[in-house]
Length: 301
Image (cartoon, rainbow, N blue to C red; front, side, top):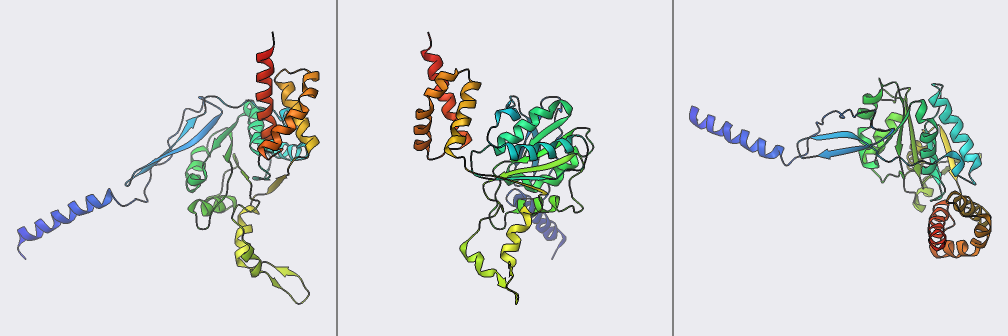
């Protein structure tokens, strides 16, 4: 083959490679862009990807929810355990990563927001990360590792399907491996699933019974338990009873300025609201209180 033919072939190959780079996702990505740390006490991790590159940045939350520990009712045991662990972390003492699991609308996410409100003045900061971006956790932790603040890395409503990439990244961080989180980072996740992965009836078939009658989980079950047990502190939340639901309604109505007589009169309506929503959760109680207080205030002379 003549030299001009070889040069032409190389040029065509380079052109083809350039076109392929725009079609095939690249494993290379830019480091996380450092934000203005003075812009907020809470940040959301955002990511923009193309076929050839991916870049992440921290977006300041301009309006941070002002929820206090005292606003959360009927979860005193959970609140005390969480607040104690969080206070240890803020003070620079040993503390555990936290999994808040259980019934929806019972205050799991609100507890994290209340913790930020309580300790922001002491240097606590929050970074919210979506499940899909958990694969970038090592980059995030590298970004904040030399900062003087204390960081909560927070993933709300976390659950994984089989084989999702973020699962292994989170497992590695929690496991204390080479890419483990620094002393100024605490991982907190909320989930309706205690073990973060879907559980099926067929999983029970992998259990084996030893000679002494003890049950041992098989590999399928072990894998599903292995991520959740890497959280040092598990806090479970349970559905509220009718009395607990009404107590939360009363607390929020009082918060919105409704007087005690009107709060008592609103009880039957609050129960109907819960029946219509199919739930007696704290979230439903808060939503009823907002609706009712708004109507009461609108009817006031």
